Length: 372
Image 1: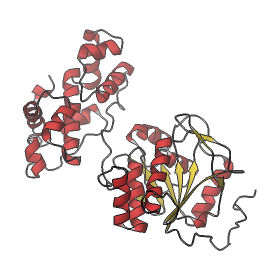
Image 2: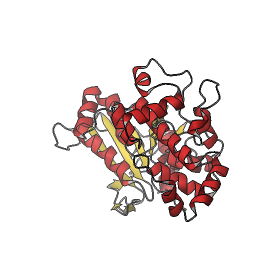
Image 3: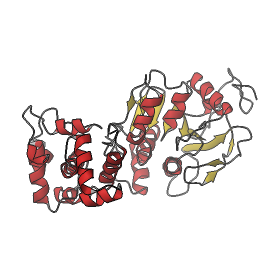
Image 4: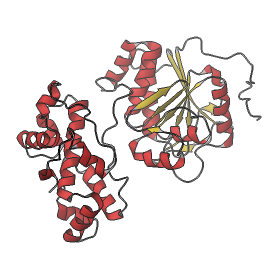
């Protein structure tokens, strides 16, 4: 099949669109795609398309396309294989063509025919969407030039390494940049789907869809991604593993002895190595991570301060509030009321040094009690 010809369509033909559907989406599955991203997007469209739970493609139309006959199963990251429903269709019949990415294993994410189809769709002015690592797939074939690309914090370093001339966005759930939309994946796919449903079918339809999915409301595109990693700039492998363990146990903090045992080193050696790599003791650094998570929750959730204290691994609200005030110069309750946030207060990025600087918000020497 020649490039630019699919299902009888040739460049210059009149576009073929569904007469009934207001929102039309075509899905392309990358090798080892994420099943959650696909299922979440499809379910949102399904619920928006019909009244009740009829699942009829009335207001929305969707299909899963593939190269060749369109029936060769594609294996997902969790091992479940899905066969595309049909071969590639006229791209101009879709409002969006969504590339569902997944694992960044060696080897191509997309085959040659799929790449040619996406390039033809882009040339025809169809908006391309990359979810999960779909942004990688679009970037690899040159379709993200001069556009911002949203990536998960988990893959931020991978993107920077592969595309040093492109600035990825890892502090948002999704990014809309003209005729390219990229989403960091996970639960953010539901938020992106709600945005597209509202754009085409109205807010009431988007709200109904989210409520049926037991989601209170869709988050905006610029909602920060939870807890970016702190381990990217740490060279020592044992310390990197220790930081990952800390991030995975914020609500139920591990002891220093437990962490040392898990990274196969004595407690004394671990403390010395950790301080050399980060400039802080493991206990102090762990406390900073938990306070930073508390800050994120205060600014991005409606949970009570008591619940946040427990979620961040503090014994009680008073302990959390005292540590928070010492670190940020403002109490959690005052921050919540919006009357005590220092100017320029930002979440630290992925550097241990940045974590320290975040606690010196007013130009004063940081409170060393936090770091001892």
